[in-house]
Length: 473
Length: 90
Image 1 (cartoon, rainbow over the protein chains, first blue to last red):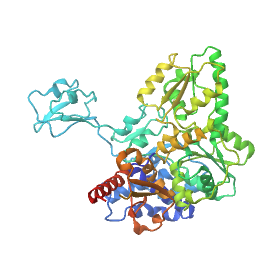
Image 2: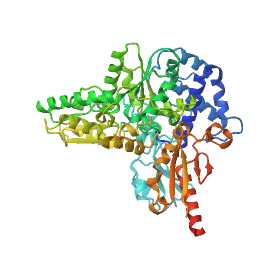
Image 3: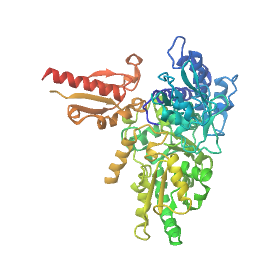
Image 4: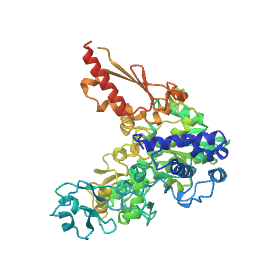
């Protein structure tokens, strides 16, 4: 998530603090004091009082320790959660969680009458309301949020522009209608619909939707003698400043025993997907879509099952990389360094991937361990990935590589779906009826590609610039 | 006229807490202003090690420290210095 707002900064600061406690072996001893330290008495807060702010910090810490806030036992101390976190093998359950104390329970109805309403004689708002949801109180229109169906007619007809549209940011961002209000007005996620794209989490101005982090589990692994291998997503290029080889040194300093580029797995994906494409098209298939974006494959699984037969059966770059690492070293603990939330879901079902750490969490870990990437010497990678794999995280990159591998063996016309919103979802539904405007469809759930994923630090332009520069080498 | 020097700390703490955004700031500035600015990225300037300097991310503009820097704050300061320079008629 690019760092252009205070909720992001505050989350990163807190992640850094929890990582530091964990590195210093003082998590259990000191975590109970953390909410108090963040908000001592008389401190400024955006919430109603320091107590509310502390309660929210407590819930954020629960999420950062990898637990669902939905199952929070309010009597349980943070130190008890820490104890459980340090003992377990893995984070269990869903990958997202809603900080219910943090959720501000946004407006019930999206239309709101401001006090510029003059209570006019014409009253087109109430005349045009199909649900009789508008009454007049103290000479001004008032919308009954329970009766309003958000049709927006009142706003269009008001001669004074007195009615405003107030969005519910998370619901508006969700392309699949998976987040909604419960009876108290707070949001909850329907996991039968959720595709784990992370758009709700980015959109919420209160930072109320969080990932359940595995940062503690990973720090614990790094402290052991186990070979812990960092599998770096190609989107990591451009994330921390400095050169890729400096980042390798920084990761080794953190305690990883080896660094492997997932772009190498992407090379395998390219080769297999190209062969698969030729086979499918030769058999008369209309089109094939890529399969590397886990949020997109969830879209197909949960919302457009008819598209399934068009999705490539080729595995993701992460899978092939994990397989490669595990074959070389069966004892290896594999950690995927990720720009993406949905990859956590993919990792749950892939035995080759043990843990997932987002770039944001990695950044917090670097700060906590006092490792500065720019101050690190360069360590060359054992094997450098080729550009055909490294360009995967930039939108259009997957199709470009696959098309190059296909060559002139079969005519290939690519179509790029750059980000999945409600609009693209409808487009994909139309493709599922049998035809697309090309025969190779690349789908990226995030607009811009993985370099614009919910877990990134850098502005996507920076990452794109660096990857584009590699294209020219 | 002497150019305005903007030093963006790209040490990991500053980078993670927001300075990565400042690296694309050039795209938002007018060309006539841009030619009077010297942007440079810098290794960790160590301000993050001492709380008395304030909070990361840090930026130096003509040697003056700005804590909790944001794109709009930096841009505002640059524009102010630029106008001062024009007034000074150097």
